[in-house]
Image (tube, rainbow over all chains, first blue to last red):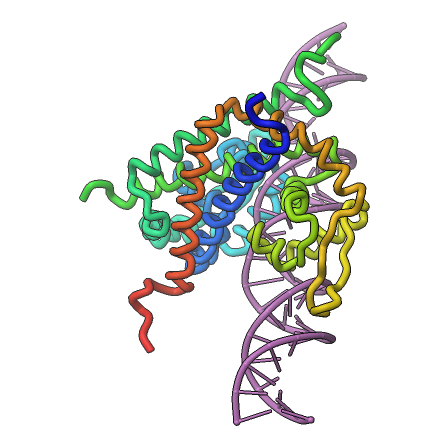
Length: 162
Length: 162
DNA sequence: CACAATTCAGTTGTGCGCAATTGAATGACG
DNA sequence: CGTCATTCAATTGCGCACAACTGAATTGTG
């Protein structure tokens, strides 16, 4: 009785607008800053993972980033063409492809060290604010993932009958 | 002296990961729910604006959504092909194209009224939590936009010399 | 051992997001 | 009035995201 559906549709607009807009605004700032490094934002994310792990099969990379091979395969090809990464099929399991940094890829890390500072400056957020926002977002993601699993297309989970 | 650059690179990872992941998780939930309506998530955003305004030039639509014609033109073509929208060049200003809902487009609103409830259920967030998160995100977007303006590619704003 | 199910990377097709460009219409200014 | 700059929508080109599928390698089971 509180809020008729009409109002919900307006409120809903604001929520998804906000997230969408924030995501793209962030993306835009990264784009500008990463241009110096010759990386796109998703490529930067891949490099961050590799700087931590140094060698990973595509599958593991995808788990860290929540991306599948459909996205990663061409992206990794481009990183390989840029000379930052090498891909070689695993000897143990020929289905798997190991991604590893080249020397050039390792070296790029030094130049990337300045990125977080510049990003932080752009947000104008302090460490605490960042932490709170991150916690909020992670909470949201967890909830959404759970809901996505519980609600396979079509109806409510209660419809589940053998 | 507080946190060496190495740690920043790790912390930074977490921030951008969180936002990126949340955005795509949200997108995924919308995708499932909107499939019933035959809309993608960005198409839904466009329809939300049109349900509020009923008739708008592409330019205004883009300002509401922060999207340019490069994104909107093909998207609107698809909405037109789906019979939800009509596009006609303005009589007053032949450069401009007016977008207006068809009867079918107006009618779709009824079926869309259920969407916000299902989304809200998926997040598990209450109205207050949503409001706080939205405020946080808007604050972030505002800061990022300001920074994007202040920092044209290449260096700090202080470099600005005639 | 043989055969079915699974796991993995890659490909294809669709749609979004953005930069850069094009071309037409409009507006401003001398 | 004519010229030049601006404002629009549309197009092109590139990269990401994701669903669906392919094909090869591996694992599980009888």
